Image 1: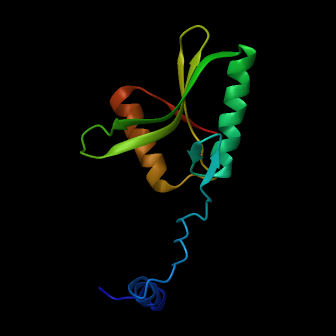
Image 2: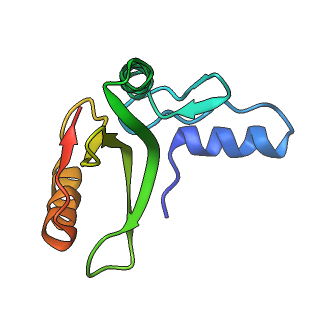
Length: 122
């Protein structure tokens, strides 16, 4: 394993008891807390607020966050950001993404083929 200069500096700081700056996320999303809940990004928080407003107005029955399920045919799991229960009982699945990646598309395709669930981007 090759160490980057930043990794060496961070390791030295940890050993010396100095605070280390948190590692940036892969896509530069900032985790945020709102009403004692943690959100992976500001975009996800905004979508949650929109869904909660729809629920409060009676446009949808319920919204559930961070639903985890196994990926068909693997030992891995997928975490889908939102499950929306419509007033008529239908379920809609949403993933809050800033942009689509090849990996997220592959996982969504696996879920569609294995469970018949269509995960929409929001």
